[in-house]
Image 1 (spheres, one colour):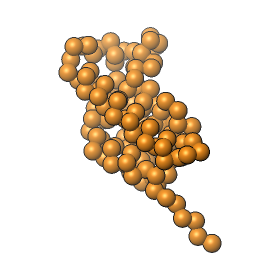
Image 2 (image 1 turned 30 degrees about the vertical axis):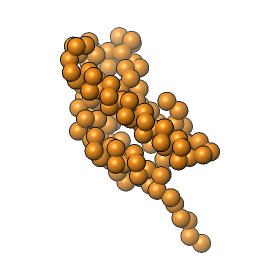
Image 3 (image 1 turned 120 degrees about the vertical axis):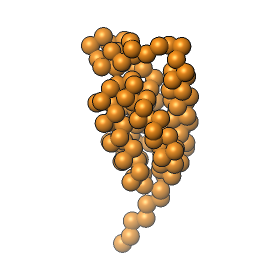
Length: 123
């Protein structure tokens, strides 16, 4: 009669809320305006989600891929162009690495919340 849903996104929602500006800045620096729009969409969706969905997991993995520079080796991507503009010794690079590590910790917490596996969430 009633479907009770457990809120498994509490920790991720709190993380994204407290790191919203950093996520948006990192997304813009590493992927330009398109990545910023995707990050903002992800932040909005996480803010209103009680459970991880396959679609939300894909968006989260896309953000993780951006932060871990997964596509910078492909010269035809905006990520490669944005990465080329970054100074490796800049403090922002270390900040992005710290943000990425913290995001990975949150993703592991999500994995722990889903004993049968998070929908499509494997970083």
